Length: 609
Figure 1 (cartoon, rainbow, N blue to C red):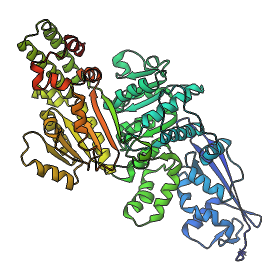
Figure 2 (cartoon, rainbow, N blue to C red):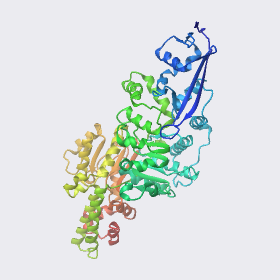
Figure 3 (cartoon, helix red, strand yellow):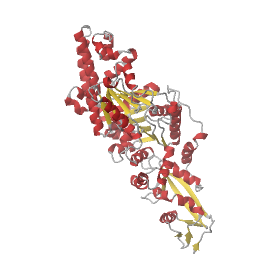
Figure 4 (spheres, one colour):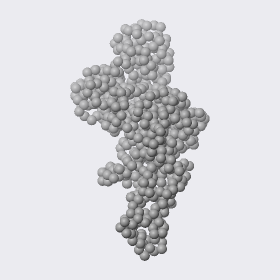
């Protein structure tokens, strides 16, 4: 028997139901799909139907021997989704399963009219993201002591919608647009509504951990933030006890990897992965550990969700929305390779459709109208343990030596005092500046700078990098060369200065490394739109002069200024001192400092406190 289809016949009835299916990690990440196709009163096994559609067959045979013509308009919804079918079938059980993050496929099924029953939670998830315009957006929490810009408010409200829906996402705003502030607003709201049942865990590179504590202290002082910088074994305090009562827990990627058992044993309300390019390699140990962390919501934060290939994006999606594209090999074959080769443009549209609800990306140019002409940030950088020991040892010796000299204001002792302060400033940058034997200790500030410049290079931005110490700039040059980040260099001994400036203007180097005396005047470098100040300068006016090499007439891009400050060092004291003293550069490191008495004894005591 052959059941042929009339040209306009539409007698294929599809019924799809979604039943919650607990995932292996205990969360409800998957929904089993039960698909029934009825033709002429006969139920057609969906596995046979999908196999026939996938193979491009014209007919399929039923269990009773009847053949069904597949040229039926009623089968068009499944025909359009047949490419997705292979992804939906669990290779172990043969059953169809749909990830709760895969809103795109769900909406396609819903639009086809094929859905007759659905999980209530799935309906809530889709409604929360699919009808944002119809839902009153939440107000910024009163605990946030900042006036969010419109795009930041929109970003916070998007995060709140994800939270309500029980979904994860990727916040991929351009560098400097306030991703940390938007996330803190989400955490503050969850606490305000009583939904923060467990602490939020922020995992970040060591070099930016202090930025989280600083931002929380500044914008959300009522949040209790706990920093974990030792494993439970080393500290002797179980992690559960250490974080008891905390709203936010901040830890490094390295520590979470080393103390995997402690972190994976606890439940977290929110998992935040900052500078998430650290887990872009899905074969690495750190990636495997963060995938096992239990959280109601996973939020990936990065300005560069894609650095080298689309597999970078897959890694981030697999953390924020596990199950959206569950198999990396299939993603590579079906999505990444066709898009990167340009052979199948429809694959890009498919990727956009699947990821659009779960990823928010705003560039600086898109929101420039909402930003002031120049934004400036102080970025705390935490010293590593070996670096900290060396610095603290020198600080203790300097205190003993210098504090005993403060009652004698002779020129000789003043020079000695200034030399001691300079040694501490150099140690804040890199211990190898004082002792080559300590070069291997490394510099967290160089690590942080390299991370930032990688992101800028990917996004097509360019930066000026300033330091007073040419020895430190030499170490920066070596690091950038090793990481294949293009650079130009200028200091007071550079010959043919104009050639170096022209090489930067006309070339494609990401960074222009400049010393204070060489670059504080006489340059116009509007090709750069980012500025990094690697060591705080005593004279804020000198900083402004350097920054204005790029922030001047002719600049048509938003200028972002980052001052990298080593936490709990003399550099922090200098920043505090800048707020009270406006001419400290000449007083301390300029020629006038040796004869000027403007740097008071109390000032020096404060620097060594």
